[in-house]
Image 1 (cartoon, rainbow, N blue to C red):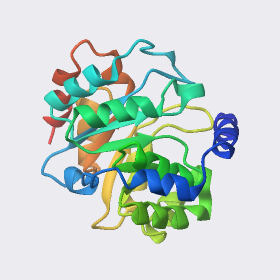
Image 2: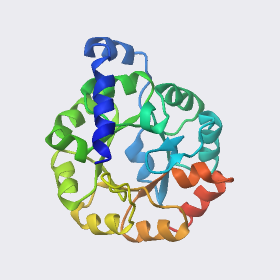
Image 3: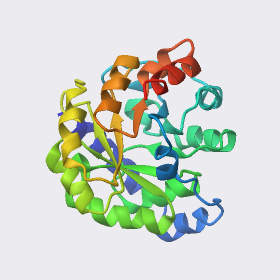
Image 4: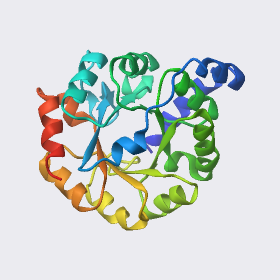
Length: 254
């Protein structure tokens, strides 16, 4: 299983985190969070554009990526939000990348990582994150208390599902933003049909985000037709020679 080694490495880092009280105190210096749900509810198909250096499936993508230059280009293209991978071992990310991006753009910034502990939520808030990712496949029933912790920290949570059952669990836990990941976390294979199939499990009023596998207008159009408010795009944008133009193309389908 590809997910378990990542979670095991994350658990090792969580053990070394400061206390919850210390991280909450650090978060007091962060300004008010920018509204992710509001940004995604705007008319048209919205794009969460990702800062991503590498991945377990693709290997090195852009090892020398400049997060500020990349994020600035994304915003110029009309990105509704920026996702910053902060997992260091498998994705080459860092919280410093997030801090730099937060200081450079005015759109919401998502900490894309494998959150297993409430301290990671407050660590994200202290670094300037406006939202965190909560993965149902990694958390199960623990999604609900971590959602509550994100609310206490004043930030949003993008709750990620891969199946109809996981989407139902996410909604039952109180999620108002649900991401459906087209990438199987056991094989890392992507299939846009996943989002199309899971869409029926999401009730009206939920902000819907299709994650992974969209690289062109045809894929974006499929997700828009399936009822998604936004798409999260990483590898295609990082590899693109003109990411702002690609974002504009993806958004133009709806």
